[in-house]
Image (tube, rainbow over all chains, first blue to last red; front, side):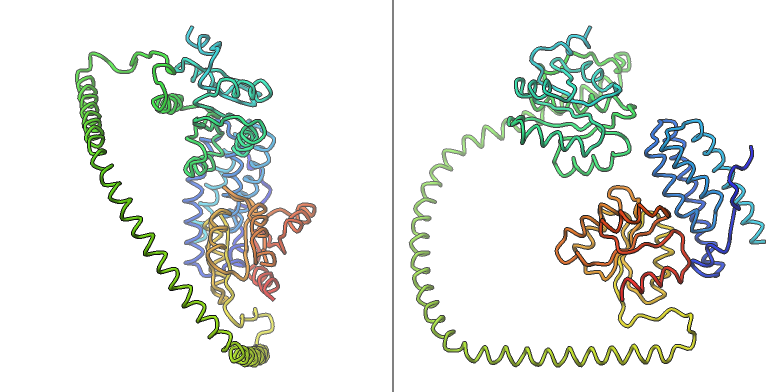
Amino acid sequence: MNQISPLPVYDKEVITSLIGDDPTLIRKYQNQFFHQAKLSLRSFVSNYRSQDSGALKEGAHFLKTSAKAIGALACADLLERLEQACLNKNASLQKELLSQIQLSLKELQSVLSHESK
Amino acid sequence: MKVNSSIICRHPKVIMIHDHREDSGAAAIISDCVRQFRSFRIGDEAVKAIQEYQPYILLIEVETVADALRHYVTLVKEFDCLQHPHHVVLLCPNKEVGLAYDICSQGVFYDYFVSRPMYEKYRLKSIINTLAKSYDENELLLDKSAEYIDENNCDIVELIDEIKAMSSQVEETIADCKTSIKQDLSAEQHAEQVSDTVSELLNKIEGDIHQSLAKIMAGLTQHKEKNLDGKNLLEQAIKQRSTQQIDKLAKLKAKQKTDTLANSSDPTSVEPVETAAKILLVEDNHIYRDMIKQILQKADYKVDESADGMEALRQVKKSKYDLIIMDLFMPKLDGLNTTKQFRKMANKKDLPIIALTSNKNKELVQKWVKYGINSYIMKPSKQENILAAVDKALS
Protein backbone atom coordinates (compact mmCIF):
# COMPACT_ATOMS: atom_id res chain seq x y z
CA MET A 1 0.00 0.00 0.00
CA ASN A 2 1.31 3.42 -0.89
CA GLN A 3 1.83 6.08 1.72
CA ILE A 4 -0.72 8.76 0.81
CA SER A 5 0.50 11.56 3.06
CA PRO A 6 3.09 13.83 1.43
CA LEU A 7 4.33 14.95 4.85
CA PRO A 8 7.36 13.44 6.60
CA VAL A 9 6.72 10.62 9.06
CA TYR A 10 8.60 12.48 11.80
CA ASP A 11 9.88 16.02 12.30
CA LYS A 12 11.89 16.36 15.49
CA GLU A 13 11.94 20.15 15.21
CA VAL A 14 8.23 20.28 16.13
CA ILE A 15 8.62 18.72 19.56
CA THR A 16 11.93 20.41 20.39
CA SER A 17 10.50 23.84 19.59
CA LEU A 18 7.60 23.00 21.89
CA ILE A 19 9.18 21.38 24.94
CA GLY A 20 12.93 21.76 24.40
CA ASP A 21 15.55 19.16 23.50
CA ASP A 22 15.65 17.07 26.67
CA PRO A 23 15.89 13.52 25.18
CA THR A 24 14.36 11.87 28.28
CA LEU A 25 11.33 14.13 28.15
CA ILE A 26 10.94 13.65 24.40
CA ARG A 27 11.15 9.87 24.81
CA LYS A 28 8.54 10.02 27.59
CA TYR A 29 6.04 11.82 25.37
CA GLN A 30 6.77 9.55 22.41
CA ASN A 31 6.05 6.49 24.54
CA GLN A 32 2.87 8.06 25.84
CA PHE A 33 1.83 8.80 22.28
CA PHE A 34 2.32 5.19 21.15
CA HIS A 35 0.26 3.98 24.08
CA GLN A 36 -2.48 6.51 23.29
CA ALA A 37 -2.38 5.59 19.60
CA LYS A 38 -2.76 1.90 20.40
CA LEU A 39 -5.90 2.54 22.44
CA SER A 40 -7.24 4.97 19.85
CA LEU A 41 -6.78 2.49 17.00
CA ARG A 42 -8.83 -0.08 18.90
CA SER A 43 -11.69 2.37 19.33
CA PHE A 44 -11.35 3.51 15.69
CA VAL A 45 -11.91 -0.04 14.50
CA SER A 46 -14.86 -0.52 16.82
CA ASN A 47 -16.44 2.79 15.77
CA TYR A 48 -15.79 2.02 12.11
CA ARG A 49 -17.50 -1.37 12.46
CA SER A 50 -20.54 0.18 14.11
CA GLN A 51 -20.44 2.98 11.49
CA ASP A 52 -20.41 5.62 14.20
CA SER A 53 -18.81 8.37 12.12
CA GLY A 54 -19.27 10.93 14.89
CA ALA A 55 -17.31 8.93 17.44
CA LEU A 56 -14.68 8.03 14.83
CA LYS A 57 -14.22 11.70 13.96
CA GLU A 58 -13.90 12.69 17.63
CA GLY A 59 -11.30 9.97 18.17
CA ALA A 60 -9.31 11.06 15.11
CA HIS A 61 -9.33 14.68 16.27
CA PHE A 62 -8.16 13.65 19.73
CA LEU A 63 -5.18 11.63 18.49
CA LYS A 64 -4.31 14.30 15.90
CA THR A 65 -3.49 16.75 18.70
CA SER A 66 -0.77 14.60 20.22
CA ALA A 67 0.43 13.35 16.82
CA LYS A 68 1.06 16.96 15.77
CA ALA A 69 2.68 17.81 19.09
CA ILE A 70 5.24 15.01 18.97
CA GLY A 71 6.01 15.73 15.31
CA ALA A 72 4.29 12.69 13.76
CA LEU A 73 3.27 14.82 10.78
CA ALA A 74 2.19 12.10 8.34
CA CYS A 75 0.06 10.44 10.99
CA ALA A 76 -1.52 13.80 11.94
CA ASP A 77 -2.26 14.49 8.28
CA LEU A 78 -3.95 11.10 7.87
CA LEU A 79 -5.99 11.67 11.01
CA GLU A 80 -7.16 15.00 9.64
CA ARG A 81 -8.22 13.25 6.43
CA LEU A 82 -10.01 10.64 8.50
CA GLU A 83 -11.95 13.45 10.23
CA GLN A 84 -12.99 14.73 6.81
CA ALA A 85 -13.95 11.24 5.62
CA CYS A 86 -16.15 10.92 8.71
CA LEU A 87 -17.84 14.23 7.96
CA ASN A 88 -18.51 13.00 4.42
CA LYS A 89 -19.57 9.57 5.75
CA ASN A 90 -17.23 7.98 3.23
CA ALA A 91 -16.86 4.49 4.70
CA SER A 92 -14.47 3.12 2.09
CA LEU A 93 -12.08 6.04 2.53
CA GLN A 94 -12.32 5.70 6.30
CA LYS A 95 -11.25 2.06 5.99
CA GLU A 96 -8.33 2.93 3.73
CA LEU A 97 -7.19 5.73 6.04
CA LEU A 98 -7.34 3.45 9.08
CA SER A 99 -4.85 1.13 7.35
CA GLN A 100 -2.69 4.11 6.38
CA ILE A 101 -2.65 5.41 9.95
CA GLN A 102 -1.60 2.01 11.25
CA LEU A 103 1.17 1.94 8.65
CA SER A 104 2.37 5.44 9.47
CA LEU A 105 2.56 4.55 13.15
CA LYS A 106 4.71 1.53 12.33
CA GLU A 107 6.98 3.70 10.21
CA LEU A 108 7.19 6.25 13.01
CA GLN A 109 8.21 3.55 15.44
CA SER A 110 10.91 2.41 13.07
CA VAL A 111 12.20 5.97 12.48
CA LEU A 112 12.32 6.70 16.21
CA SER A 113 14.08 3.45 17.06
CA HIS A 114 16.77 4.24 14.43
CA GLU A 115 17.11 7.74 15.84
CA SER A 116 17.65 6.51 19.40
CA LYS A 117 20.48 4.16 18.33
CA MET B 1 -48.36 -11.94 16.27
CA LYS B 2 -47.14 -10.31 19.48
CA VAL B 3 -45.54 -7.37 17.72
CA ASN B 4 -48.78 -6.47 15.99
CA SER B 5 -50.89 -7.01 19.07
CA SER B 6 -49.00 -4.34 20.99
CA ILE B 7 -48.58 -1.91 18.13
CA ILE B 8 -52.34 -1.74 17.55
CA CYS B 9 -53.06 -1.38 21.28
CA ARG B 10 -55.89 1.11 21.81
CA HIS B 11 -54.96 2.31 25.29
CA PRO B 12 -51.17 2.17 25.37
CA LYS B 13 -49.49 2.71 28.72
CA VAL B 14 -46.05 2.60 27.17
CA ILE B 15 -45.47 5.15 24.42
CA MET B 16 -42.45 5.89 22.31
CA ILE B 17 -42.07 9.20 20.50
CA HIS B 18 -39.45 9.53 17.79
CA ASP B 19 -38.26 11.57 14.84
CA HIS B 20 -36.99 8.62 12.82
CA ARG B 21 -35.77 8.82 9.39
CA GLU B 22 -34.58 5.27 9.83
CA ASP B 23 -35.97 2.77 12.30
CA SER B 24 -33.47 1.86 15.02
CA GLY B 25 -35.39 -1.29 15.91
CA ALA B 26 -36.26 -0.12 19.44
CA ALA B 27 -40.03 -0.16 18.77
CA ALA B 28 -39.92 -3.80 17.67
CA ILE B 29 -37.98 -4.79 20.81
CA ILE B 30 -40.41 -3.02 23.13
CA SER B 31 -43.48 -4.36 21.41
CA ASP B 32 -41.99 -7.82 21.80
CA CYS B 33 -42.24 -7.58 25.59
CA VAL B 34 -44.90 -4.95 26.29
CA ARG B 35 -48.62 -5.55 26.02
CA GLN B 36 -49.74 -1.92 25.82
CA PHE B 37 -47.32 -0.17 23.56
CA ARG B 38 -47.55 2.28 20.69
CA SER B 39 -44.98 4.33 18.86
CA PHE B 40 -45.63 7.80 17.43
CA ARG B 41 -43.66 10.11 15.23
CA ILE B 42 -43.30 13.47 16.99
CA GLY B 43 -46.22 15.72 16.07
CA ASP B 44 -49.83 16.44 16.87
CA GLU B 45 -50.80 12.78 16.96
CA ALA B 46 -48.10 12.02 19.54
CA VAL B 47 -49.18 14.92 21.76
CA LYS B 48 -52.81 13.86 21.52
CA ALA B 49 -51.92 10.27 22.41
CA ILE B 50 -49.90 11.30 25.46
CA GLN B 51 -52.72 13.57 26.64
CA GLU B 52 -55.33 10.88 26.13
CA TYR B 53 -53.54 7.72 27.29
CA GLN B 54 -51.37 9.22 30.06
CA PRO B 55 -48.59 6.64 29.60
CA TYR B 56 -46.70 5.24 32.60
CA ILE B 57 -43.56 4.89 30.51
CA LEU B 58 -42.49 7.36 27.83
CA LEU B 59 -39.55 6.51 25.58
CA ILE B 60 -37.99 9.36 23.61
CA GLU B 61 -35.82 8.54 20.61
CA VAL B 62 -34.72 11.63 18.72
CA GLU B 63 -31.58 12.81 16.92
CA THR B 64 -29.76 14.22 19.96
CA VAL B 65 -30.06 14.21 23.73
CA ALA B 66 -30.61 17.98 23.65
CA ASP B 67 -33.55 17.46 21.28
CA ALA B 68 -35.02 14.90 23.68
CA LEU B 69 -34.83 17.40 26.53
CA ARG B 70 -36.43 20.09 24.35
CA HIS B 71 -39.29 17.81 23.28
CA TYR B 72 -39.94 16.78 26.86
CA VAL B 73 -40.03 20.41 28.06
CA THR B 74 -42.36 21.32 25.18
CA LEU B 75 -44.71 18.45 26.03
CA VAL B 76 -44.91 19.52 29.66
CA LYS B 77 -44.88 23.31 29.31
CA GLU B 78 -46.62 23.97 26.03
CA PHE B 79 -49.04 21.05 25.83
CA ASP B 80 -49.57 20.53 29.53
CA CYS B 81 -48.89 16.79 29.08
CA LEU B 82 -47.35 14.33 31.53
CA GLN B 83 -48.86 15.82 34.67
CA HIS B 84 -49.34 12.27 36.01
CA PRO B 85 -46.81 9.80 37.52
CA HIS B 86 -44.59 8.55 34.72
CA HIS B 87 -41.04 7.56 33.87
CA VAL B 88 -38.98 8.65 30.87
CA VAL B 89 -36.42 6.47 29.13
CA LEU B 90 -34.03 8.23 26.80
CA LEU B 91 -32.97 6.34 23.66
CA CYS B 92 -29.76 7.96 22.53
CA PRO B 93 -26.94 7.55 19.99
CA ASN B 94 -23.73 5.96 21.21
CA LYS B 95 -21.78 9.20 20.74
CA GLU B 96 -23.93 10.91 23.37
CA VAL B 97 -23.90 8.14 25.94
CA GLY B 98 -21.90 10.22 28.46
CA LEU B 99 -24.35 13.09 28.29
CA ALA B 100 -27.30 10.72 28.59
CA TYR B 101 -25.69 9.11 31.63
CA ASP B 102 -25.16 12.50 33.31
CA ILE B 103 -28.75 13.51 32.67
CA CYS B 104 -30.15 10.31 34.12
CA SER B 105 -27.76 10.36 37.07
CA GLN B 106 -29.13 13.80 37.93
CA GLY B 107 -32.62 12.29 38.02
CA VAL B 108 -33.91 14.19 34.99
CA PHE B 109 -34.92 10.96 33.25
CA TYR B 110 -35.28 7.46 34.66
CA ASP B 111 -32.70 5.75 32.47
CA TYR B 112 -31.07 5.77 29.04
CA PHE B 113 -30.47 3.16 26.39
CA VAL B 114 -28.08 3.31 23.42
CA SER B 115 -30.30 2.52 20.45
CA ARG B 116 -27.98 3.71 17.68
CA PRO B 117 -26.29 1.38 17.03
CA MET B 118 -28.54 -1.23 18.56
CA TYR B 119 -26.53 -4.04 20.06
CA GLU B 120 -27.89 -4.80 23.52
CA LYS B 121 -31.62 -5.24 23.10
CA TYR B 122 -32.00 -7.22 26.33
CA ARG B 123 -30.91 -4.21 28.37
CA LEU B 124 -33.80 -2.21 26.91
CA LYS B 125 -36.15 -5.06 27.78
CA SER B 126 -34.65 -5.15 31.26
CA ILE B 127 -35.27 -1.41 31.78
CA ILE B 128 -38.89 -1.84 30.70
CA ASN B 129 -39.35 -4.92 32.90
CA THR B 130 -37.98 -3.13 35.96
CA LEU B 131 -40.18 -0.12 35.30
CA ALA B 132 -43.26 -2.28 34.73
CA LYS B 133 -42.85 -3.58 38.29
CA SER B 134 -43.48 -0.04 39.57
CA TYR B 135 -46.90 -0.14 37.90
CA ASP B 136 -49.10 -3.10 37.08
CA GLU B 137 -46.66 -5.65 35.79
CA ASN B 138 -49.31 -8.08 34.52
CA GLU B 139 -51.21 -5.30 32.80
CA LEU B 140 -48.11 -4.04 31.00
CA LEU B 141 -45.97 -7.04 30.12
CA LEU B 142 -46.60 -9.85 27.71
CA ASP B 143 -46.21 -13.36 29.13
CA LYS B 144 -42.75 -14.48 28.31
CA SER B 145 -41.36 -17.90 28.92
CA ALA B 146 -37.83 -17.91 30.25
CA GLU B 147 -36.49 -19.07 26.91
CA TYR B 148 -32.82 -18.90 27.87
CA ILE B 149 -33.12 -20.83 31.09
CA ASP B 150 -32.46 -24.44 30.30
CA GLU B 151 -34.91 -26.48 32.38
CA ASN B 152 -32.49 -29.41 32.22
CA ASN B 153 -29.74 -27.40 33.86
CA CYS B 154 -30.58 -28.33 37.45
CA ASP B 155 -27.96 -26.05 38.98
CA ILE B 156 -29.36 -22.89 37.45
CA VAL B 157 -32.99 -23.83 38.05
CA GLU B 158 -32.28 -24.66 41.71
CA LEU B 159 -30.32 -21.44 42.25
CA ILE B 160 -33.11 -19.36 40.71
CA ASP B 161 -35.72 -21.05 42.90
CA GLU B 162 -33.54 -20.49 45.95
CA ILE B 163 -33.14 -16.77 45.23
CA LYS B 164 -36.87 -16.41 44.58
CA ALA B 165 -37.60 -18.11 47.93
CA MET B 166 -35.14 -15.78 49.70
CA SER B 167 -36.79 -12.75 48.09
CA SER B 168 -40.22 -13.95 49.28
CA GLN B 169 -38.81 -14.32 52.79
CA VAL B 170 -37.47 -10.76 52.74
CA GLU B 171 -40.82 -9.50 51.45
CA GLU B 172 -42.63 -11.34 54.25
CA THR B 173 -40.29 -9.81 56.84
CA ILE B 174 -40.96 -6.34 55.42
CA ALA B 175 -44.71 -7.01 55.50
CA ASP B 176 -44.45 -8.13 59.17
CA CYS B 177 -42.54 -4.94 60.00
CA LYS B 178 -45.24 -2.85 58.30
CA THR B 179 -47.93 -4.59 60.39
CA SER B 180 -46.06 -3.95 63.64
CA ILE B 181 -45.54 -0.31 62.63
CA LYS B 182 -49.30 0.00 62.13
CA GLN B 183 -49.87 -1.48 65.59
CA ASP B 184 -47.43 1.01 67.06
CA LEU B 185 -49.31 3.86 65.41
CA SER B 186 -52.00 3.97 68.10
CA ALA B 187 -49.27 4.38 70.71
CA GLU B 188 -47.83 7.07 68.51
CA GLN B 189 -51.15 8.93 68.46
CA HIS B 190 -51.00 9.11 72.26
CA ALA B 191 -47.46 10.43 72.01
CA GLU B 192 -48.71 13.06 69.55
CA GLN B 193 -51.18 14.37 72.13
CA VAL B 194 -48.37 14.75 74.66
CA SER B 195 -46.30 16.43 71.99
CA ASP B 196 -49.11 18.96 71.31
CA THR B 197 -49.15 20.00 74.98
CA VAL B 198 -45.37 20.41 74.98
CA SER B 199 -45.59 22.48 71.77
CA GLU B 200 -48.06 24.88 73.40
CA LEU B 201 -45.69 25.38 76.32
CA LEU B 202 -42.75 25.91 73.98
CA ASN B 203 -44.72 28.52 71.96
CA LYS B 204 -45.43 30.45 75.16
CA ILE B 205 -41.76 30.41 76.18
CA GLU B 206 -40.78 31.47 72.66
CA GLY B 207 -43.16 34.44 72.81
CA ASP B 208 -41.60 35.58 76.10
CA ILE B 209 -38.10 35.32 74.63
CA HIS B 210 -39.15 37.41 71.58
CA GLN B 211 -40.49 40.16 73.83
CA SER B 212 -37.26 40.25 75.84
CA LEU B 213 -35.18 40.30 72.66
CA ALA B 214 -37.20 43.21 71.23
CA LYS B 215 -36.40 45.24 74.35
CA ILE B 216 -32.68 44.45 74.09
CA MET B 217 -32.65 45.37 70.37
CA ALA B 218 -34.31 48.73 71.05
CA GLY B 219 -31.60 49.49 73.61
CA LEU B 220 -28.89 48.45 71.17
CA THR B 221 -30.25 50.71 68.39
CA GLN B 222 -30.06 53.73 70.68
CA HIS B 223 -26.51 52.80 71.60
CA LYS B 224 -25.58 52.34 67.90
CA GLU B 225 -26.94 55.77 66.91
CA LYS B 226 -24.78 57.38 69.56
CA ASN B 227 -21.68 55.65 68.21
CA LEU B 228 -22.42 56.30 64.52
CA ASP B 229 -20.37 59.47 64.31
CA GLY B 230 -17.36 57.72 65.80
CA LYS B 231 -17.77 54.84 63.31
CA ASN B 232 -17.86 57.18 60.31
CA LEU B 233 -14.62 58.76 61.41
CA LEU B 234 -13.03 55.32 61.80
CA GLU B 235 -14.17 54.21 58.29
CA GLN B 236 -12.69 57.34 56.72
CA ALA B 237 -9.38 56.71 58.43
CA ILE B 238 -9.30 53.05 57.23
CA LYS B 239 -10.14 54.12 53.65
CA GLN B 240 -7.38 56.69 53.58
CA ARG B 241 -4.89 54.20 54.91
CA SER B 242 -5.89 51.56 52.27
CA THR B 243 -5.43 54.07 49.43
CA GLN B 244 -1.96 54.92 50.72
CA GLN B 245 -1.08 51.19 50.88
CA ILE B 246 -2.34 50.52 47.32
CA ASP B 247 -0.26 53.45 45.96
CA LYS B 248 2.77 52.14 47.77
CA LEU B 249 2.25 48.61 46.32
CA ALA B 250 1.82 49.95 42.77
CA LYS B 251 5.07 51.95 43.07
CA LEU B 252 6.86 48.85 44.35
CA LYS B 253 5.56 46.72 41.44
CA ALA B 254 6.60 49.33 38.89
CA LYS B 255 10.10 49.39 40.41
CA GLN B 256 10.30 45.56 40.28
CA LYS B 257 9.37 45.57 36.59
CA THR B 258 12.01 48.20 35.76
CA ASP B 259 14.63 46.18 37.68
CA THR B 260 13.68 42.99 35.84
CA LEU B 261 13.98 44.65 32.44
CA ALA B 262 17.32 46.19 33.39
CA ASN B 263 18.74 42.86 34.63
CA SER B 264 17.61 40.88 31.56
CA SER B 265 20.82 40.07 29.65
CA ASP B 266 19.13 38.05 26.86
CA PRO B 267 16.75 40.24 24.88
CA THR B 268 14.99 37.23 23.28
CA SER B 269 14.26 35.57 26.63
CA VAL B 270 10.67 35.59 27.80
CA GLU B 271 10.01 38.18 30.48
CA PRO B 272 9.33 36.51 33.84
CA VAL B 273 6.01 37.32 35.43
CA GLU B 274 5.95 39.63 38.43
CA THR B 275 3.49 37.58 40.44
CA ALA B 276 2.48 34.03 39.59
CA ALA B 277 -0.66 34.35 37.49
CA LYS B 278 -3.07 31.44 37.82
CA ILE B 279 -4.02 29.72 34.57
CA LEU B 280 -6.66 27.08 33.90
CA LEU B 281 -5.60 24.78 31.08
CA VAL B 282 -8.50 22.95 29.42
CA GLU B 283 -7.50 20.24 26.94
CA ASP B 284 -8.82 16.71 26.53
CA ASN B 285 -5.59 15.24 25.17
CA HIS B 286 -3.51 14.62 28.29
CA ILE B 287 -0.20 14.44 26.41
CA TYR B 288 -0.58 17.89 24.85
CA ARG B 289 -2.05 19.24 28.08
CA ASP B 290 0.98 18.02 30.01
CA MET B 291 3.36 19.61 27.49
CA ILE B 292 1.68 23.02 27.74
CA LYS B 293 1.50 22.71 31.52
CA GLN B 294 5.27 22.10 31.72
CA ILE B 295 5.96 25.13 29.53
CA LEU B 296 3.76 27.38 31.65
CA GLN B 297 5.08 26.08 34.96
CA LYS B 298 8.67 26.62 33.82
CA ALA B 299 7.67 30.24 33.17
CA ASP B 300 6.48 30.47 36.81
CA TYR B 301 2.77 30.36 36.15
CA LYS B 302 0.46 28.45 38.43
CA VAL B 303 -1.46 25.93 36.33
CA ASP B 304 -4.64 23.95 37.00
CA GLU B 305 -5.92 21.41 34.50
CA SER B 306 -9.31 20.30 33.17
CA ALA B 307 -10.00 17.57 30.63
CA ASP B 308 -13.25 19.03 29.31
CA GLY B 309 -15.56 22.02 29.40
CA MET B 310 -17.83 20.70 32.15
CA GLU B 311 -14.87 20.15 34.47
CA ALA B 312 -13.56 23.63 33.59
CA LEU B 313 -16.87 25.24 34.53
CA ARG B 314 -16.78 23.51 37.90
CA GLN B 315 -13.19 24.64 38.53
CA VAL B 316 -13.87 28.23 37.52
CA LYS B 317 -16.76 28.34 39.98
CA LYS B 318 -14.44 27.08 42.73
CA SER B 319 -11.24 29.08 42.07
CA LYS B 320 -10.20 32.41 40.67
CA TYR B 321 -8.11 32.38 37.48
CA ASP B 322 -6.25 35.11 35.63
CA LEU B 323 -6.40 33.32 32.29
CA ILE B 324 -7.99 30.31 30.61
CA ILE B 325 -6.29 28.40 27.82
CA MET B 326 -8.77 26.07 26.22
CA ASP B 327 -9.05 23.56 23.42
CA LEU B 328 -12.05 24.23 21.19
CA PHE B 329 -13.01 20.68 20.25
CA MET B 330 -13.57 18.61 23.36
CA PRO B 331 -16.04 15.95 24.43
CA LYS B 332 -18.96 16.72 26.78
CA LEU B 333 -18.84 20.51 26.36
CA ASP B 334 -16.73 22.12 23.63
CA GLY B 335 -14.63 25.26 23.99
CA LEU B 336 -17.13 27.64 22.39
CA ASN B 337 -20.01 26.57 24.56
CA THR B 338 -17.81 26.58 27.64
CA THR B 339 -16.79 30.16 26.78
CA LYS B 340 -20.46 31.12 26.44
CA GLN B 341 -21.10 29.68 29.89
CA PHE B 342 -18.10 31.55 31.36
CA ARG B 343 -19.35 34.80 29.91
CA LYS B 344 -22.73 34.28 31.56
CA MET B 345 -21.05 33.99 34.97
CA ALA B 346 -20.77 37.06 37.15
CA ASN B 347 -17.19 38.46 37.24
CA LYS B 348 -16.09 36.24 34.35
CA LYS B 349 -17.11 38.54 31.50
CA ASP B 350 -13.58 39.94 31.17
CA LEU B 351 -11.66 36.78 32.03
CA PRO B 352 -9.14 36.36 29.19
CA ILE B 353 -9.61 33.15 27.20
CA ILE B 354 -7.09 31.82 24.69
CA ALA B 355 -8.29 29.09 22.34
CA LEU B 356 -6.08 26.14 21.36
CA THR B 357 -6.85 25.13 17.81
CA SER B 358 -5.46 23.66 14.63
CA ASN B 359 -8.04 25.41 12.48
CA LYS B 360 -6.80 28.39 10.43
CA ASN B 361 -10.17 29.39 8.98
CA LYS B 362 -10.55 33.17 9.41
CA GLU B 363 -14.35 33.10 9.46
CA LEU B 364 -14.21 30.64 12.32
CA VAL B 365 -11.78 32.85 14.21
CA GLN B 366 -14.20 35.77 13.86
CA LYS B 367 -16.98 33.55 15.16
CA TRP B 368 -14.86 32.63 18.21
CA VAL B 369 -14.23 36.29 18.96
CA LYS B 370 -17.99 36.86 18.83
CA TYR B 371 -18.41 34.10 21.39
CA GLY B 372 -15.97 35.85 23.72
CA ILE B 373 -12.59 34.24 22.96
CA ASN B 374 -9.78 36.80 23.16
CA SER B 375 -7.07 35.14 21.09
CA TYR B 376 -5.85 31.76 19.90
CA ILE B 377 -2.75 29.56 19.79
CA MET B 378 -2.23 27.24 16.86
CA LYS B 379 -1.65 23.57 17.67
CA PRO B 380 1.20 22.87 17.98
CA SER B 381 3.03 26.15 18.45
CA LYS B 382 6.55 26.99 19.42
CA GLN B 383 7.20 27.48 23.13
CA GLU B 384 7.97 31.19 22.72
CA ASN B 385 4.76 31.78 20.74
CA ILE B 386 2.70 30.18 23.49
CA LEU B 387 4.38 32.24 26.21
CA ALA B 388 4.07 35.43 24.15
CA ALA B 389 0.33 34.84 23.70
CA VAL B 390 -0.07 34.19 27.42
CA ASP B 391 1.96 37.25 28.34
CA LYS B 392 -0.09 39.44 25.98
CA ALA B 393 -3.39 38.11 27.32
CA LEU B 394 -2.30 38.78 30.90
CA SER B 395 -0.91 42.24 30.34
